[in-house]
Image (cartoon, rainbow, N blue to C red; front, side, top):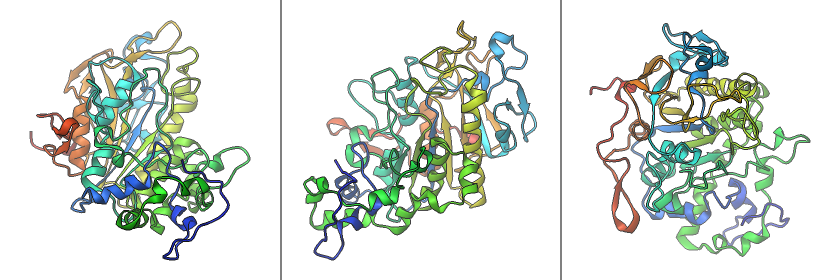
Length: 448
């Protein structure tokens, strides 16, 4: 484990100090260690033929399709729910009143309204399927899409290829993997996870605190005895080069952003993580995953069962809706203004939808039979709806889409060959997506 509280620095024989070496940040146990970073080049992962990027917003908890992006204004109240449908800047497309800013930017994103899967209606399963395109089974854990990108594309401009913000998904009740690791690819390709708790988000806490760069500039005594500290020769130099880029380090410093920009995204974990995602893409990171929430227990989230320890439906109007509305639209706006939206897919994915009928507690329960997700950038044609649900939002009515197709769509946007093979368990090659799965071609206006 790397500690950030040791006071003395150590100088290497080439004149670099260990404090300099750790400038790039804390490498948590769940993040990318120096050995893993060095292994990226050792495994021949670097390929610069494609410069496309992806930001995956994992909307932990499962947003209700009927209260967000698939409004049923003519349905009975127990199905329709408490929120009104509002028009967007694209004729014919309506969304919930809880997203007034999104309504002004509907031309930038597409809505998939017929997402579905047939696996168990538990959060962990949905997280796996939406982030890997597959279901954990037979002891085989498939890699997160960002980890596949790490394997096939490797680092760029001295930045880690895949960064996960602000923290990995924790307990959501299923006791299963969440699909946020490199799985059978091995820890070399796990995401880089900065120390969000005491680092770049510290200014959000009452009383402030040291910022991320101040933290990581401190040398660490425990590191000296670790396996990473014993790296030598080419592997050590590769690791040092990969994480010593001033551009990559500076990307984590949100203090460089004007206060108005930070406020534009929202002064909360999700908003600031979305802002950081934009900065990381600019710094050369290929894939950024942002988990909107860490758990669904004792926290306001999309998981609106209506009774404790879960959230009431009113939180969509009061907390969760405004939080997403601010961060998502600011991210799309800034990527567009900076000329990055065309090359950066932004996928906002929930793990399932919610029951069509409001339950006795005034909430909605898990419903993987039908829900909505958002896709933008990366060649996606905004201002459209793909697929449709039935009159109660219960099941796909037209053009159903699956988690595997979403994964294929992300890979297609990144220029990754869908028939490319990964080194799987027991040496058996595994294709990046299941054989025969195709991207959602309507998003790109591709011929069928």
